[in-house]
Structure formats: C-alpha cells, structure tokens
Amino acid sequence: MSGKLNFDAAVLGGGASGTCLCWYLMKAGMRVALVNKQSDETTSTLKAALINPVSAKQLNLNWEAEKSLDEFIRLIKESNADECMLNQNGILRPITDQHLYDSVQNNLKGHTWPDNWFSKVGKEDLKNRIPELCQNYGGLEILVGSTLKPAPFLAHLQQQLVSNGMRIFESNDYRIEKQKNSAVIYLEDDQKIRCDRLVFATGSHLTQSPLWSSLPIYKIKGQTAEFTVSEPITWKQPIIGDGYIIPLNPTTLMLGGTHGLHFNDAEPDQQASTKLYEKFQTMLPELAEHAQLKSQWAGIGVTTPNRLPFIGDHPRNKCYYIFGGLGPKGLLLAPYTAKLAAGNIANKYPLPDELNAERHWSKLRRLGKI
Image (tube, rainbow, N blue to C red; front, side, top):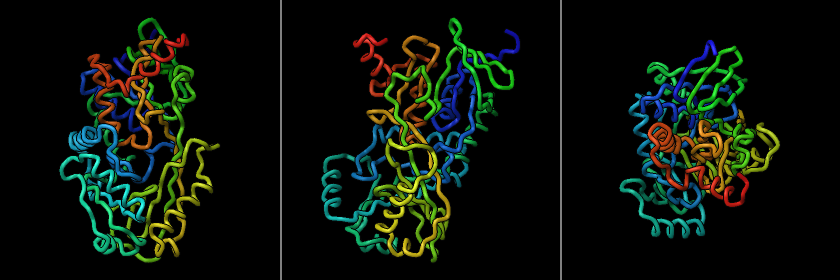
C-alpha cells in the first residue's frame, strides 16, 4: 500500500492516559504515533485539577498511592515541566461534623501512611488559614497534594515527544482496518498509518466501540462551576470534602465533583450546579452568600467496577490493546499505569491482575461468550 507511515505502536487518544502512554512507549525505544480527536469534554481540558493520592471523603489511601505519586512527580521532573503548571502547596481536608471526625480518626488508626504525607490541623489554625470556613473540628493537611493545570502540562508532554521523534495526527474521523499482524488507520486527509500495536486510549469513546463493548466500562460525568467572590481571599490551598474547591485567583473559586453515572448529555446541568452551590454554602457560607456564578464546565470520563483501568490485549485481535477506565483519579494514575502498560507492550512484562483486562476476558471464556 503506497503512502503508508509505519510505526511500532499507534495510540488513539491524546488525553492524560494516551499522552502518558506515548511517553513511556517512546522511552522503551518504540516508534510511536498519536492520533488525537479534539474534544472539550475531558478532564484534560479543565483549568485546574487535583493530584490527590487519598480519597476525599474518608481519607483512605488510593490504589498504589505511593508508587502513583512518585511516578507522577518523576514525570514532571523528567519532562522539565514549567513550575507554573503544578502548585505543590498541599490540600486541606476540613472536618465539619462529629461523625466525620470519628470516621477519620478510625481510618487514620487503621492505615499506615507514608512519612510526611499529612499533618493534623487544629480548628483554630484552620480557621486562621481560611477565615470564611464554616464551623469545624479541625482537619488534615495532605502535604503531598497538589494542583495541576492539565491542558498546558499535556501540551508540554506532547511537544517534548514530538521533539524526540513522535508523530501526532489530529483527526476527528478515521477508519481502522485489521490486517494479518497489524492494523491500518485511514485518516481523513488520506494519510495511512500502519502499526504493529494499536492502543485504544479514547476515554469515554471506548463505550461506543464494538471492540470493547463486552467490558464493563461506564461513563461518569464531572462538573465544575467558577464563582467570583466580592472580597479577595487570602488563602491558596485547595479544599476537599464532598467535592473540591480550588482558588484560581484571589477573587475566583472553582468548585467541582463527580456526579454519577446517569446523565443525558455532556452539558452542565442544573441539578449538579445546584449541588455544587449547596456545597459552597455549607463549606464557605460567608463567601457563597455574595458570590456570582461566572462559568460552568462538564466533562465525561470512564470508570470500571473496581475503579481501576482495563489494560491489555483484545482477546481475539492481539494487535488491538486497551488502556482506559482510569476514573476520577486519572491524572494521578496515568503516569504509573502507562509505565506498566508500556512495559507490557514493549517487553511483555506482566500486568498486575487488578489492572489486566484478562480479569474480565477470563470470566467471559468460562461463560462461553468469547
């Protein structure tokens, strides 16, 4: 076939998972192409996102929290990302009622946190830091938490990859053809890409692909709302609880959260907006009283039953590979899980059972469905 461009691997999807996977595939010495569809519905387009290795509600450590955070920080340094893309000021978790206080205390006793990951904050100290905060029982400061600007960071990674020889193809429409031991991607500008491994890292579009329809991958919707406040705030640390509050500047706060599996479209909806404002009123009542809604955003992600991604080969077409379902913690998980996926693709290193797509394919085989 004339005009083909040949690669060891092509990655569909230029969000956090796809871009990070390209990074580690290139490190493994592979010739890589990234095929990206423009979308404003992904977490990667948020103005700011939290890099937080613990659950906001009960303060449990996330899956492989230490390894995930270490790899994220390593990627930031290795890629020479600009310091303005990452604010490492920590994250505050106020405790606002007795029941939550008791629950958090029990969780802290039941888990061994890595050294220097958190410190307790007394109620007076917390009130001094955030004068507008509601009545509280003190809280925790997650010292290793940070705030990332996803779009500039991913653009920076892609620029680094291109400078090292990766090709990026922007295409909103393409067709895939399976060949004997490879795949060919037909782009809308008549270019053709042949690759030995074709990786699907397309986020919510995975749920529309017949190739992966038998995997339990679910769409989830996140929504944010920006509010301007009448008096400038003096604090810069994000707050987490049932959702999150990120100061974008002294007069603008971004509130956000994930709002379940049931929704009709990717547009901001009134029910989620109302919930965000109610959280605002509960956590920062003085600021919420005179705040003005500035803008809203909504995005679609994907998750899985165990809230960990599916990674691995298609059961019938071994040149097809999936890397998706990273969920709300996708920006934190992406570097470490991408490193594991790249090791599996390039060197056949085994994947952890809890990530391997084989955990579901084996069930389907037992049922005679594949």
